[in-house]
Image (cartoon, rainbow over all chains, first blue to last red):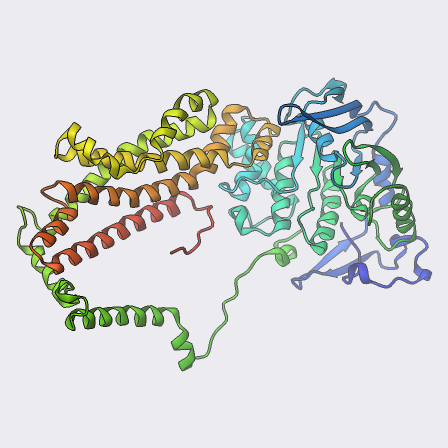
Amino acid sequence: MGAPRPAEGWGAPQTADNLPGGLSGTPEAARSRTTAAGTRVRMTQVEGKRALMDNDTSKPPKIACEKICKTFIQKGTQQVHVLEDISLEVFDNEFLVILGPGQSGKSTLLRIIAGLETPSTGRAILDGREVSGPGPDRGLVFQSYMLFAWRTVLGNVEMGPKLQGVGKKERREIAQHYIDLVGLKGFEKHYPHQLSGGMKQRVGIARAYANNPQVMLLDEPFGQLDAQTRLFMEKETERIWQAEKRTVIFVTNNIDEAIILGDRIVTMVGKLPGRMGPAYPVDLERPREPTDMRFLKLRYAITEASELVL
Amino acid sequence: MTTGTIANEIVKSVRERKEFSLLAVIRNEYFLYLVSSVLFVLIWHWAAAEQVLGKSLATPYAVAKELARLMTIKLAGLTLLGHIWASTQRILIGFVLASVVAVPLGLFMALNRTVNAIVKPVFDLFKPMPPIAWISIAILWFGIGEASKVFIIVIGTFVPCLLNAYNGIRLIEPELYDVVRSLGGNRKDEILQVSFPAAFPAIFAGLQISLSIAWTCVLAAELVSARSGLGWIIVQGMKLTKPELVIGGMLIIALVAWLTTLAVSGLERLLCPWKRHIEGL
């Protein structure tokens, strides 16, 4: 699974002739791709349609935000209004992207859903119950990785089960499963400082997954990566998510990342306080190609309507 | 997904094979270490032999001969090794006493606001006092025996031990605690899984600094009043106008202090294999 895309990436010229039908119309069902290291990897096609069918919007939402406002008090008296009247519903196994510029309060919203901040008014609801604090049912991935520098890859990933009181042998097995899933097999004994940025975030994702959370919350996880690694990691995120489906809320400021990954994109606009902008369903089959005409159309529509300069 | 596919993300250090040439030898750092050491000894010898600084500079040979002599003959009942041990023993006792109290106290202050509020005003009063300033009062309180010297070392090493433990905890990224909480941990897990291990390198840095301060303290104490120790040897050299004894004592102190620092950083490497170690001066 993954990305059947030419190695040239963004720069690959695509004529109008092979645009209709998008990437899935490419003649080969499976194509080889050459990584920068020169390893040839076999990539197979995914039926993108199936992914869209998986989330069922007839059931009650997995997560609901009801009229959330958030005001921080700085230096005793100064009030900073961060979020204004945010209402949002996320459905089971949906990949929701919250797209917004810096300072639009999207990270704060994610932290409220995670239970790390409390809303000033309104409430966040998970499975019908109000969120009152952080918990292992929500896995968090941070922009700055936040790995335990003193623990190996294995030690980082098994931390969740360890805190849950899972026995040593069992948590090793769980950790190994997710290390394999994110593609870090062979790096179990490495310390974070021995890994590159992309690999560090793989550990971050595996660590969040290892607790078997129902919801994954990712806060600009690839914000510190270079463009190529970022694109690669986006494809990897898609692959991992399709291998182990979860409800995902993915915060980003990158339009392409939002369209590549999201079942639905919710925009946030404004600088302090952040408000809800328009939402966009992404009816493109996976994996998505940034050069697909419909991709570009959606990209254009979002750019037109929002304050994102991209 | 195999290891190979992410090989492009691995940071590799590639060591290129260099061809042998004269230029490469001249630029080789170990060769330059040797050149600079030999030059230093030669200049020292020249300055001593020509009496550039008067008669008070002994030649390297005279110093070496004096040190060799001290290995066998006894000065105030102790050979050179005995004096080295006298100083080292004082340092170890004072250093252990101070760190056993100061490190936990610093950790507690950083983790608990009440403890911090109680200890901080008193600590802030003593913090800026140079440990040497305590020598007179130490002698008044404890006499000129071992206790006063150990006391000075405790005073001198207490501050950096406590400060580094405290800062080590205070400088931890608060988001690391968020990770523990979101993984289902409680306050106890935050402290055991994040606070202590994350502060470990800072604690060790504090111990390193304390050790070098301890040497300063023990010398100062021995210079003022002692019947043994390396500081006492230096004072004897001064009283007897034997520059080779003074310089020899100084060299031995440098050597022993360097060895103890080496031992502590070796211990750190053993206990913190996750830390990125850099070659410092």
